[in-house]
View 1 (cartoon, rainbow, N blue to C red):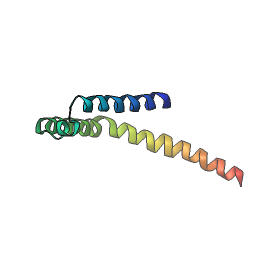
View 2: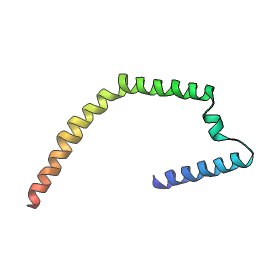
View 3: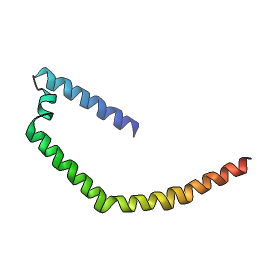
View 4: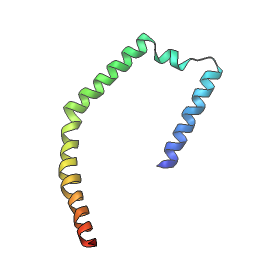
Length: 82
């Protein structure tokens, strides 16, 4: 997994260097009105998707599984060490 992440970061950096070499201004592109509108639209979509579909199951899993089970097992393991 870490090799894939490092590889992706290196590829992004190389792509940005190549785009800069050919005169593309990534900052100018990102700050454009149309791009900002598209990014705002996608951010609103992601927030809506999170709030309507993902938040409840993830919070439930976090509360019941991670906090409810794993944390208790961790605490029990600490009690055994004392």
